Length: 417
Image (cartoon, rainbow, N blue to C red; front, side, top):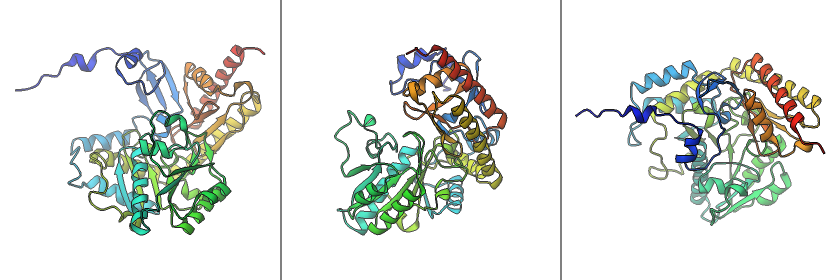
């Protein structure tokens, strides 16, 4: 008997209000609903065009519906979708080879998200420490204002209390220290610490670059105490800063690195990579995931890596970064009552709002969206720019034009004091 598809279910009209009716209210999405996109161009239900400088929070780094990725995914979708972890598959084996050959790592574990990659990294660090030193070595050191995911473990490790309120009791033996504070790190990283986890550039915490000296000090303190150094490169990785991974710019090699977001260009995939010695703390059954490393996700990620990890591509990211920084520097000079100095690396850039606009980053991004430019925030005081890595000079110029118009509109409507 052939089941007949209820086309009414798949084509019925929906609006932004449908979100409020049927979805759990974990987000407060914009009023417009995107329906089509290509590159950095996006259109909503009403046909309005937007220039997307969010790339899905640093995800679609090759642009929406990149034809090379679409073709690779389509071919794999007509080959094999899923096998389960009782079997391996050719795309994930090729992806593992590509990722380890391009980095410090010997081994890779694949999952579905950045949170899962960090969960796996933290579990591995504790497992490794328990086996090598004993169960007393279990404490995890993280940074205030960090973000490592939304599972109970990773949200507890992240240093933002607003994300843990109401979920207590939280996992124990987690210690938070100020970011870029060497003396605080020295005091915190003792012999009972199994892992130090850090973003080499904080994303959600305000786009704060990690000082090279601070990251080098973390490496030294971990070496002295036998702790593992974990770099969370979920947001900074896969070309975002102009290198394949940001640790390559910092002169510091972690023991474990986590990756996601841009690795799949929008297709869900996460990765944890590490050395051979550390990886062997896990054995069959120690950790797992049903969908992790499935052929569809692995195929997409393999093609993403092949496109981004090229000298000319990464050089262009740095070139585009210089142009974006130049535009934002001029913007800050022209509107010193609104903006501070831009900061960040590559095409992950934060622009602080200042003066009477402090706390109003969201207002400016909403004004920009109304004029056709999609932007992010990193807290109430920082606007965040994370365009696709294929952004053109003309698109940077257009974003600057729209943003200036948005600022002017906000200045004209700001209450006088």
